[in-house]
Length: 244
Image 1 (tube, rainbow, N blue to C red):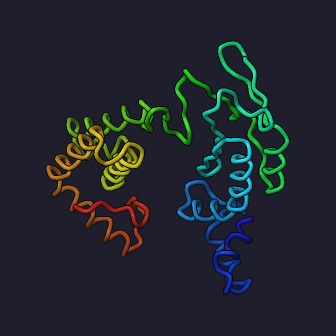
Image 2: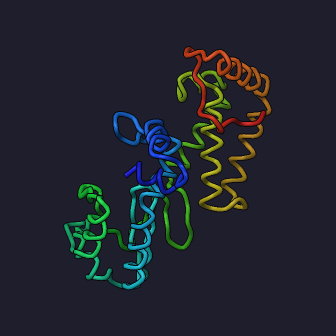
């Protein structure tokens, strides 16, 4: 639970202090999706499960990858271990059903498998793990790259304000931060020396330099709104500012 996770992180805090932190992290008794606290608490809660699934995967010649609640078992063997899952052809697709070892490990930790998202992938089809294409190399999906290029091209052609209104509810800083975050995601997946990352970053820096006056003014407005606690100004989350 969230309370147990917070307790393990702040072992010296008393129950009242832990309850306060839990209340700050949760909304209506649940951990909201997208909360800055979610990744930390998710990893704390899933830590024991990660250890158990890793041991299970190694025992059967597999590797396990988890991002949030997205868990993938992968193997380079010709066939997936039948002790972990049963697979079969289903027309052009493949059906899959988890076997007891995985189900038991998840259930003991209080998790339920979302059957609608359960899938089996095999070559020669494109393989994806935690939203990335995997194979001879790791890369971002084509749609992600296409959206990133479109964002940069729209900024160049339509201008910063128009893009902010279309993509970020009028907040120029949020729009620029989002683009920069997408570019860094490419770097993490494909490396900072890859051509796509270098081209996207160069385009981004050129546009940022072109609109530096607008961006500086937007940053000042946000800083003033933070001080005044002005609810009419969209303020990006803390720690996500782009340096102009």
